[in-house]
Amino acid sequence: MGSTERIRNVAKRVAKWARAGHQMVVVPSAMSGETNRLLALAGELAPDHPETPYYRELDMLAATGEQASSALLAIALQAEGLDAVSYTGWQVPVRTDSSYTKARIESIDPERVRADLDAGRVVIITGFQGIDPLGNITTLGRGGSDTSAVAVAAALKADECLIYTDVDGVYTTDPRVVPAARRLNSVSFEEMLEMASLGSKVLQIRSVEFAGKYKVPMRVLSSFTSWDIDLAEEAKSGTLITFEEDEKMEKAVVSGIAFNRGEAKISVRGVPDTPGIAAAILGPVADANIDVDVIIQNISKDGKTDFSFTVSQTDYQRALDLLREKVAPELGAAEVVGNPNIAKVSIVGIGMRSHVGVASTMFRTLAQEGVNIQMISTSEIKTSVVIDEKYLELAVRALHTAFGLDKVE
Ligand code: ASP
Ligand code: MG
Image (cartoon, rainbow, N blue to C red; front, side):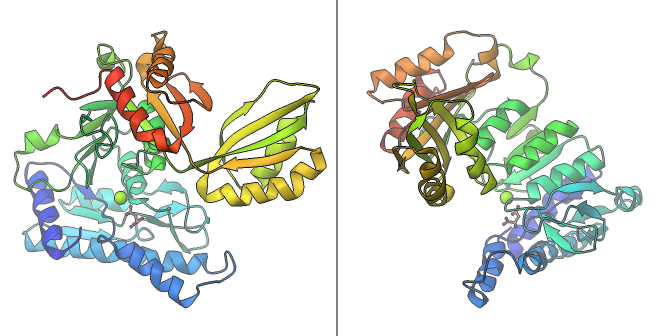
């Protein structure tokens, strides 16, 4: 919601649903750019403040963005002639743990909201925020209103959680990379989880985890359609994230190609090939709060081996320093080398469970394009490869075509 005009459009859309007889709870995000604006103000005042002390205040600050948009939406709904009331996270309350800026929702009390719904009101609940056991305001991490919405839907046992966003659904891959990418009418919750974690930024990943845990049907649809489109049409637009796998059976084996540019590779060379080596390398990395993704250990030669793994680019330098300064000297490793210019490409599909040879089609396709695979990792429903970042777009396009995902005009 970037302007009062857009808020009015949302209000009219909500009014349309409410007048059709649906009980509606709306979970707004802040107005566009507002969270960034607020956080930048904090940055101006405390540019090089040591790590954590003001995290609590960042949450106090950032939560105001959603408070404003929620109140404005309630006002717009009232102007439409509907009875509407807005609540902040703490008024509901939405209870979270105390990890400021990345809190997790623990529970939501549905009573107050339920009473309003029963009295015929539209209820608006601020996204992105809650209250911790000590009464402090917390926020859920960037993009957290998706998770708020799913959590509210779960607490109220809603029929469906509609996520209105700036794209009109979930695509087979990023249409900016592959113009022939297609919107999926439905995608299974497990596939969505893989795609979200592999860098498709449509939804906050935690919202998908939440939807899976509480079996909340979720639909991703465009907030840019005109409010007065036919309700039945709107209700089946976008992409439904489903729990039924049967209807997927006749569909493509691979549902989508996900990719992530934001990873980097680190190799610790010439470490002794003895029990405990993975723990000795990855233990200190984990202790430094650095997440490790794809891991490979090479064959041993003369009792020594090479150990490689990927981390997020934002943790790359820290991981490299840590390994060079502390870990490598202790292990007597020959050297620690890194490459921040890699990318991970993954094929995702629940159909992969029942089909063999899917991964080999992937490898063959990349070979035909002359793309060298540096690392491979697999799970039941995905195969990921790490490649040189400069071949990313080529690889994604070739795989998209090879797995029959291109749009037919
Ligand atoms: N306003 C918050 C953010 O910008 C939450 C959200 O938009 O989902 O991250
Ligand atoms: Mg968002």
